[in-house]
Length: 162
Image (cartoon, rainbow, N blue to C red; front, side):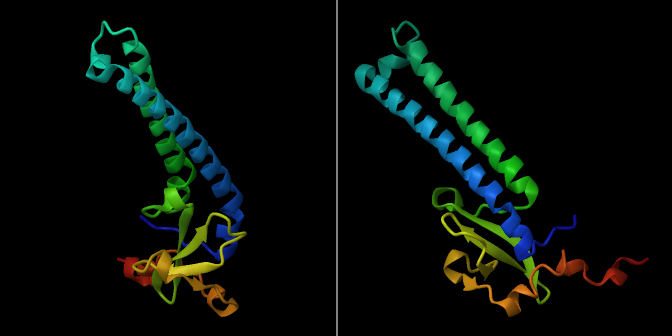
């Protein structure tokens, strides 16, 4: 499968989309937390008796648990539909810290264009094995080389000739 390498311009064009997605994810996470808080209160009041079907608050407890699961599935779908399927990478802890990576290429290898919530646009890149701490500023010279080849492994089309 051929992977797409983002240019800085393409990544920057998606920043409003990413911001909106993070807002929706945050709203869902907040709603799930409110439900989890209610679960804690019910469990504190009743202990394990909340799990008994004849408990007065059992159905409410179950409804909150189901709602949390439903919200988590919705967040997973948002990430899949609005980020992963578009080619945007959400690194570990990216959700918690508002960080996304846009796969790109430079000098025949894969790298990431890196954006952090609060930044106006994509201004940094890093090697795929260095992560956020390895970010380097995108200079005009670097920008001119980013995203020129979609898949470095396939840059020589003659390899595909039979």
